[in-house]
Image 1 (cartoon, rainbow, N blue to C red):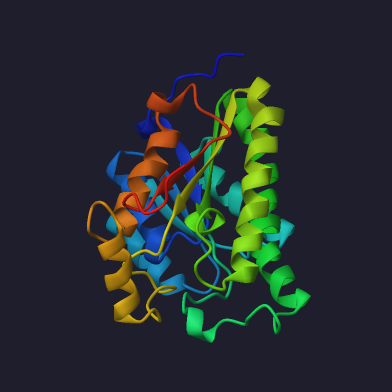
Image 2: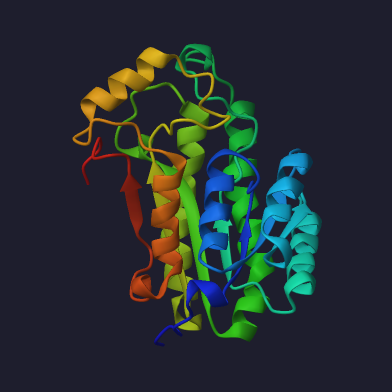
Length: 258
């Protein structure tokens, strides 16, 4: 089946964790292109409502823990009610209780399975809930775009983020298997994987010397920003990517190859 063409300004988008950091950059990027965006949040209500207020009727803030399927169903329903159209595009960005500070993370001899399970709940269960909740609307629209947020630590595991990296690796697998399963319905599923971003709430705990070392190691001589990664998310949602699915695009200034 050839996927339908639908411009960014004709899409109804849900961005999980869309109120702060990378999520806010993604929400702003879609809104800047004329899309209608439901800014999902769990604990950042003030930030979500402030961001939505900037863009008037094309944005709405919607509360919901992505780990709770009933709440996710309510998020999708609220988006559809607000915009009078089915959700066509979901961005799985929400990050559950994690700070990017290698010195503070549990080492291999210390980490417990519960630490991994907590990240799986956010990075696998959350996207699974959101994709499944949005599928009926995508089927109604005859069009669907799923963009998952990953990490370059699959290829370059230089810090002991064991739980985070394992969960995101599982999400990459889900990206590829769902791409195969949903492709016949006109739905593409892709991943954008950044490195450390400068700066988000999650990376605020990162020591300055780490940012300096990363910048020095990249061909571009700089640490990737949330806005630069958001550009790649827009690509996968846009008509320019209509023939692309099951892919993982690394956006880290060239630090990791392949």
